[in-house]
Length: 622
Image (cartoon, rainbow, N blue to C red):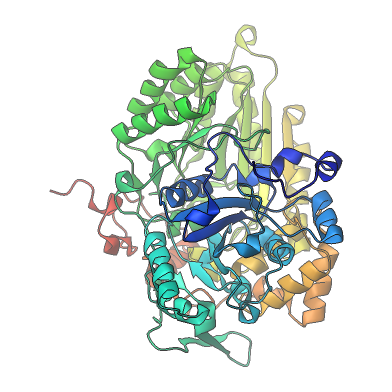
């Protein structure tokens, strides 16, 4: 019987002890002494968030299918346990074996959000692993990072031995084989990293030297060791049905954020929204077959006992066999008490018909993401959604019995005017009016509720907006107040509600999203100053970060409000996502010119993703 890393006394004194004991249904148990490689899969946030992440479950399942690899999970200890572990010198441990993470061969982080960066340092620190890659010895695990934030790894570069750029299913097996071969030959840590850096998708920051211009921009980034490629091309799965998936998802003991079976129906997106990083870096769109999805839906529901299944993708409505899949799920599982969740749908007649079958209309709200308040600005961001379509969708929803609508917008988008901002309130008002004008009193489900939320715009790498400047905290708040004031002028203001995101958090996210290696000093200084769980508003302390910028002599505005020149070298330019810089530049100029670009199924725009040789780029070709 395995011994828990935490005593009963500690477990009884902390919140949610089930976060730390492992042994959940479908967790993999192996004998650590009978495997060649131990991999600690780390999620730098609390258990409930990490266990809701699909990518982690996919790779956990895939790694553990190998007899020679044991993959275990580790999450950020919550603040109460963090304190106890430091006081009592308890090292960070993996859930399955409860062994210290420092004993593992690899510590792999999935990096989903910039505001988790200080938690990465927390986990290294608690593990007793030196924060800086250059200070690690032969006995320390290889620290590897992946996930969406790895598309600009530079603000974290000093802390990682290795980054995996792209989708994890393709190169981890060769990486593990390489590790074992290096071990057999008696090779050093450096020998392994040199060999790994020559695998597709692998980036070892230590083997690249960055030089800067006098103005602080990058002059060059060059390999400094033999055989290291100048550019790293992202990895992706071309045939989705060949990729491993999860037959037996782990079922947590406590309620997590996504407490359901998740069925990934496709990767990528055809839409081309100019603010969306995922829509660009995950190109081209690739779909699972209907039979593959039916098979996994059966297996995962049977192996978990979950009562809900959710379809996962960036834009579910674009999945070719959506209708067939949804009708299958309704026919097969609804009478077994299984709810079907359909996020990322465009609101049209089919979607509403389906949702009325799978949702309790009176309890649920419908979500639209117009992103901008005016048609002009929606054209700038290439949203491909007209006011007419939004209002028609809302009307059909109201006629179907819904009376609650959520609207998502962004403030601070390039070229935004006061008219665009006020358009958020005006569009919300039009939707409320529609309900009262078109739905007879006797058939209404009470009053209409329209909740509009705005996040603040962050220009992300590998998007056409990577050249854009960002608002200051004060400018963001000023824009939010303009919208809020306009809402108060609306006739139906009692039916309307407006929320907005934290401005100081967004500014910081912008720095970390587009930062270079110099920003790593700020991340470390903020961590040492007490920054932790920055993505949780109750634990975010902006003053800690501002002091870190000051102490490190780093000008925050250099990374945020400065508009970039078209020829500036970006910290992430060494990564090849398939989508060319020329295409992104063309789209940036199209945005300024308010020109709409058709989606991938309407017309190929020559983004470069065709070079991968599959996906939507090759549909309908004989």
